[in-house]
Length: 72
Image (tube, rainbow, N blue to C red; front, side):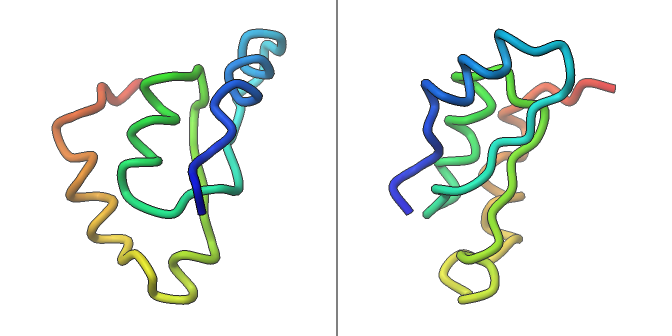
């Protein structure tokens, strides 16, 4: 829960030509912003913090609202 491994996610996304999904490590809404702004990840997931109700999904959505450019 200390955040995504930004160095690893960045290295993988720089190396491969397919979309990268960051997984494991999220502990708060800020961690999602960090992984999207500091790496080339196309998506990020976290199951544990949502299943254990440590962080509501709505909190993550609210935190990211207006902070990221949505690529289509």
